[in-house]
Image 1 (cartoon, one colour):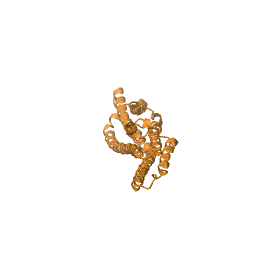
Image 2 (tube, rainbow, N blue to C red):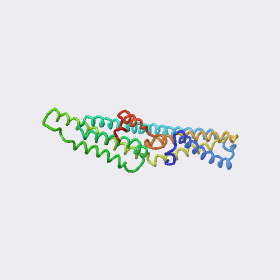
Image 3 (cartoon, rainbow, N blue to C red):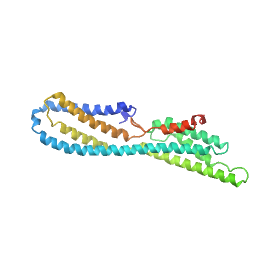
Image 4 (cartoon, helix red, strand yellow):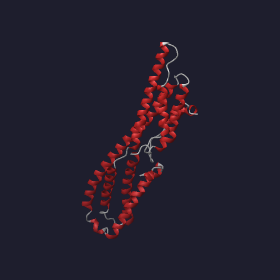
Length: 270
Protein backbone atom coordinates (compact mmCIF):
# COMPACT_ATOMS: atom_id res chain seq x y z
CA UNK A 1 0.00 0.00 0.00
CA UNK A 2 2.97 2.29 -0.47
CA UNK A 3 1.11 4.34 -3.10
CA UNK A 4 -1.15 5.62 -0.31
CA UNK A 5 1.64 6.34 2.17
CA UNK A 6 1.71 10.08 1.50
CA UNK A 7 -2.02 10.50 0.93
CA UNK A 8 -4.05 12.35 3.59
CA UNK A 9 -6.59 10.31 5.51
CA UNK A 10 -9.52 12.18 3.93
CA UNK A 11 -8.30 10.90 0.56
CA UNK A 12 -6.78 7.52 1.41
CA UNK A 13 -9.85 5.71 2.79
CA UNK A 14 -12.16 6.96 0.00
CA UNK A 15 -9.58 5.64 -2.48
CA UNK A 16 -9.88 2.18 -0.96
CA UNK A 17 -13.67 2.44 -1.21
CA UNK A 18 -13.59 3.61 -4.83
CA UNK A 19 -11.02 0.99 -5.85
CA UNK A 20 -12.97 -1.95 -4.42
CA UNK A 21 -16.30 -0.60 -5.69
CA UNK A 22 -14.97 0.04 -9.21
CA UNK A 23 -13.46 -3.42 -9.57
CA UNK A 24 -16.62 -5.09 -8.27
CA UNK A 25 -18.94 -3.09 -10.53
CA UNK A 26 -16.82 -3.78 -13.62
CA UNK A 27 -16.78 -7.52 -12.89
CA UNK A 28 -20.51 -7.54 -12.19
CA UNK A 29 -21.26 -5.59 -15.37
CA UNK A 30 -19.31 -8.12 -17.44
CA UNK A 31 -21.03 -11.03 -15.67
CA UNK A 32 -24.47 -9.51 -16.28
CA UNK A 33 -23.81 -9.39 -20.03
CA UNK A 34 -23.61 -13.19 -20.08
CA UNK A 35 -26.15 -14.07 -17.38
CA UNK A 36 -29.52 -12.31 -17.32
CA UNK A 37 -31.15 -11.38 -13.98
CA UNK A 38 -34.17 -13.56 -14.74
CA UNK A 39 -32.02 -16.68 -14.58
CA UNK A 40 -30.81 -15.80 -11.10
CA UNK A 41 -34.02 -14.76 -9.39
CA UNK A 42 -35.13 -18.34 -8.72
CA UNK A 43 -31.85 -19.00 -6.85
CA UNK A 44 -32.17 -16.06 -4.46
CA UNK A 45 -33.25 -18.13 -1.47
CA UNK A 46 -30.27 -20.47 -1.57
CA UNK A 47 -27.79 -17.73 -2.49
CA UNK A 48 -29.12 -15.49 0.27
CA UNK A 49 -28.60 -18.19 2.90
CA UNK A 50 -25.06 -18.93 1.76
CA UNK A 51 -23.99 -15.30 1.49
CA UNK A 52 -25.27 -14.65 5.01
CA UNK A 53 -23.03 -17.43 6.37
CA UNK A 54 -19.96 -16.34 4.40
CA UNK A 55 -20.60 -12.67 5.10
CA UNK A 56 -20.84 -13.20 8.85
CA UNK A 57 -17.61 -15.21 8.90
CA UNK A 58 -15.77 -12.56 6.91
CA UNK A 59 -17.15 -9.68 8.96
CA UNK A 60 -16.08 -11.36 12.20
CA UNK A 61 -12.53 -11.84 10.92
CA UNK A 62 -12.39 -8.30 9.55
CA UNK A 63 -13.71 -6.84 12.80
CA UNK A 64 -11.21 -8.87 14.81
CA UNK A 65 -8.34 -7.57 12.66
CA UNK A 66 -9.50 -3.97 13.05
CA UNK A 67 -9.39 -4.44 16.83
CA UNK A 68 -5.99 -6.11 16.66
CA UNK A 69 -4.30 -3.45 14.53
CA UNK A 70 -5.89 -0.69 16.61
CA UNK A 71 -4.34 -2.23 19.74
CA UNK A 72 -0.96 -2.28 18.00
CA UNK A 73 -1.46 1.32 16.88
CA UNK A 74 -2.27 2.39 20.43
CA UNK A 75 0.81 0.58 21.75
CA UNK A 76 3.01 2.34 19.18
CA UNK A 77 1.59 5.70 20.29
CA UNK A 78 2.39 4.87 23.91
CA UNK A 79 5.95 3.95 22.92
CA UNK A 80 6.46 7.31 21.23
CA UNK A 81 4.98 9.17 24.19
CA UNK A 82 7.21 7.26 26.61
CA UNK A 83 10.32 8.01 24.56
CA UNK A 84 9.50 11.71 24.63
CA UNK A 85 8.91 11.50 28.39
CA UNK A 86 12.23 9.78 29.01
CA UNK A 87 13.95 12.47 26.95
CA UNK A 88 12.33 15.15 29.12
CA UNK A 89 13.48 13.36 32.29
CA UNK A 90 17.05 13.09 30.99
CA UNK A 91 17.06 16.76 30.00
CA UNK A 92 15.85 17.82 33.44
CA UNK A 93 18.47 15.68 35.17
CA UNK A 94 21.10 17.18 32.87
CA UNK A 95 20.20 20.62 34.20
CA UNK A 96 21.51 19.49 37.61
CA UNK A 97 24.90 18.51 36.21
CA UNK A 98 27.89 20.79 36.73
CA UNK A 99 29.37 22.81 33.89
CA UNK A 100 30.62 22.24 31.19
CA UNK A 101 28.89 18.86 30.92
CA UNK A 102 25.54 20.52 31.58
CA UNK A 103 25.57 22.58 28.40
CA UNK A 104 26.91 19.69 26.35
CA UNK A 105 24.24 17.27 27.55
CA UNK A 106 21.38 19.73 27.19
CA UNK A 107 22.45 20.69 23.68
CA UNK A 108 22.85 17.04 22.66
CA UNK A 109 19.48 15.96 24.07
CA UNK A 110 17.73 18.98 22.56
CA UNK A 111 19.15 18.17 19.14
CA UNK A 112 18.10 14.54 19.54
CA UNK A 113 14.51 15.57 20.29
CA UNK A 114 14.36 17.83 17.24
CA UNK A 115 15.93 15.15 15.04
CA UNK A 116 13.42 12.50 16.10
CA UNK A 117 10.40 14.74 15.70
CA UNK A 118 11.33 16.53 12.48
CA UNK A 119 13.41 14.02 10.52
CA UNK A 120 13.35 10.50 11.90
CA UNK A 121 9.66 10.58 12.80
CA UNK A 122 8.66 11.68 9.29
CA UNK A 123 10.60 8.83 7.68
CA UNK A 124 9.97 5.95 10.09
CA UNK A 125 9.75 3.39 7.30
CA UNK A 126 13.49 3.56 6.57
CA UNK A 127 15.21 0.20 6.89
CA UNK A 128 18.10 1.58 9.00
CA UNK A 129 18.19 3.92 11.96
CA UNK A 130 18.83 7.63 11.60
CA UNK A 131 22.61 7.82 12.04
CA UNK A 132 22.50 11.38 13.37
CA UNK A 133 19.91 10.62 16.05
CA UNK A 134 21.78 7.47 17.02
CA UNK A 135 25.07 9.40 17.26
CA UNK A 136 23.47 12.09 19.42
CA UNK A 137 22.09 9.51 21.84
CA UNK A 138 25.44 7.71 22.01
CA UNK A 139 27.19 11.02 22.65
CA UNK A 140 24.82 11.81 25.53
CA UNK A 141 25.56 8.43 27.12
CA UNK A 142 29.33 8.77 26.72
CA UNK A 143 29.27 12.32 28.11
CA UNK A 144 27.35 11.14 31.15
CA UNK A 145 29.68 8.21 31.71
CA UNK A 146 32.73 10.47 31.49
CA UNK A 147 31.50 13.01 34.04
CA UNK A 148 34.31 13.61 36.55
CA UNK A 149 33.62 13.51 40.29
CA UNK A 150 33.31 16.89 42.02
CA UNK A 151 36.51 18.51 43.19
CA UNK A 152 37.36 18.06 46.83
CA UNK A 153 36.31 15.32 49.20
CA UNK A 154 32.94 16.62 50.38
CA UNK A 155 30.89 13.42 50.81
CA UNK A 156 27.63 15.27 50.29
CA UNK A 157 28.63 16.66 46.90
CA UNK A 158 30.08 13.33 45.82
CA UNK A 159 26.86 11.54 46.75
CA UNK A 160 24.73 14.18 45.02
CA UNK A 161 26.79 13.99 41.84
CA UNK A 162 26.68 10.19 41.85
CA UNK A 163 22.90 10.18 42.39
CA UNK A 164 22.31 12.61 39.51
CA UNK A 165 24.61 10.64 37.23
CA UNK A 166 22.81 7.38 38.07
CA UNK A 167 19.38 8.92 37.50
CA UNK A 168 20.54 10.42 34.21
CA UNK A 169 21.93 7.09 33.02
CA UNK A 170 18.68 5.35 33.99
CA UNK A 171 16.71 7.86 31.93
CA UNK A 172 19.05 7.45 28.97
CA UNK A 173 18.76 3.67 29.20
CA UNK A 174 14.96 3.90 29.24
CA UNK A 175 15.16 6.32 26.31
CA UNK A 176 17.31 3.84 24.37
CA UNK A 177 14.92 0.99 25.14
CA UNK A 178 11.92 3.02 23.97
CA UNK A 179 13.79 4.01 20.82
CA UNK A 180 14.68 0.38 20.09
CA UNK A 181 11.06 -0.67 20.58
CA UNK A 182 9.90 2.13 18.28
CA UNK A 183 12.23 0.93 15.56
CA UNK A 184 10.90 -2.62 15.87
CA UNK A 185 7.29 -1.43 15.77
CA UNK A 186 8.01 0.76 12.74
CA UNK A 187 9.04 -2.33 10.76
CA UNK A 188 6.22 -4.60 11.91
CA UNK A 189 3.43 -5.29 9.45
CA UNK A 190 0.60 -7.73 9.03
CA UNK A 191 1.89 -10.90 7.36
CA UNK A 192 1.43 -11.02 3.60
CA UNK A 193 -0.66 -14.14 4.08
CA UNK A 194 -3.13 -12.13 6.14
CA UNK A 195 -3.64 -9.64 3.32
CA UNK A 196 -4.04 -12.54 0.91
CA UNK A 197 -6.70 -14.08 3.14
CA UNK A 198 -8.55 -10.76 3.40
CA UNK A 199 -8.55 -10.25 -0.35
CA UNK A 200 -9.65 -13.82 -1.06
CA UNK A 201 -12.42 -13.51 1.52
CA UNK A 202 -13.57 -10.26 -0.04
CA UNK A 203 -13.58 -11.89 -3.47
CA UNK A 204 -15.71 -14.76 -2.16
CA UNK A 205 -18.25 -12.46 -0.52
CA UNK A 206 -18.48 -10.27 -3.61
CA UNK A 207 -18.82 -13.31 -5.86
CA UNK A 208 -22.07 -14.15 -4.11
CA UNK A 209 -23.36 -10.72 -5.14
CA UNK A 210 -23.19 -11.93 -8.74
CA UNK A 211 -25.81 -14.58 -8.03
CA UNK A 212 -28.50 -12.04 -7.18
CA UNK A 213 -30.49 -10.76 -10.12
CA UNK A 214 -32.20 -7.35 -10.09
CA UNK A 215 -34.00 -6.18 -13.20
CA UNK A 216 -33.02 -2.56 -12.66
CA UNK A 217 -29.40 -2.37 -13.82
CA UNK A 218 -28.42 0.76 -11.92
CA UNK A 219 -29.92 -0.45 -8.64
CA UNK A 220 -27.97 -3.68 -8.88
CA UNK A 221 -24.71 -1.91 -9.66
CA UNK A 222 -25.32 0.50 -6.79
CA UNK A 223 -25.83 -2.39 -4.35
CA UNK A 224 -22.68 -4.09 -5.60
CA UNK A 225 -20.71 -0.86 -5.27
CA UNK A 226 -21.95 -0.28 -1.72
CA UNK A 227 -21.10 -3.82 -0.66
CA UNK A 228 -17.62 -3.70 -2.20
CA UNK A 229 -17.01 -0.18 -0.93
CA UNK A 230 -17.83 -1.13 2.66
CA UNK A 231 -15.38 -4.04 2.45
CA UNK A 232 -12.76 -1.73 0.93
CA UNK A 233 -13.27 0.81 3.72
CA UNK A 234 -12.47 -1.65 6.49
CA UNK A 235 -9.71 -3.31 4.49
CA UNK A 236 -8.11 0.11 4.09
CA UNK A 237 -8.53 0.77 7.80
CA UNK A 238 -6.70 -2.46 8.63
CA UNK A 239 -3.95 -1.72 6.11
CA UNK A 240 -3.34 1.82 7.35
CA UNK A 241 -3.51 1.06 11.08
CA UNK A 242 -1.02 -1.78 10.64
CA UNK A 243 1.64 0.83 9.73
CA UNK A 244 1.42 3.18 12.74
CA UNK A 245 4.53 5.22 11.92
CA UNK A 246 3.68 5.90 8.28
CA UNK A 247 0.77 6.00 5.91
CA UNK A 248 -2.43 7.97 5.98
CA UNK A 249 -3.19 7.06 9.61
CA UNK A 250 -0.06 7.50 11.70
CA UNK A 251 0.77 8.18 15.30
CA UNK A 252 0.87 11.71 16.64
CA UNK A 253 4.17 13.40 17.46
CA UNK A 254 2.44 15.91 19.74
CA UNK A 255 4.25 14.49 22.77
CA UNK A 256 7.59 15.42 21.20
CA UNK A 257 6.29 18.89 20.34
CA UNK A 258 5.08 19.35 23.91
CA UNK A 259 8.45 18.33 25.38
CA UNK A 260 10.34 20.54 22.94
CA UNK A 261 8.16 23.59 23.55
CA UNK A 262 7.79 23.11 27.30
CA UNK A 263 11.55 22.80 27.84
CA UNK A 264 12.54 25.33 25.14
CA UNK A 265 14.70 22.70 23.46
CA UNK A 266 14.89 24.64 20.20
CA UNK A 267 16.89 27.29 22.06
CA UNK A 268 19.22 24.78 23.71
CA UNK A 269 19.85 23.01 20.39
CA UNK A 270 21.53 26.04 18.83
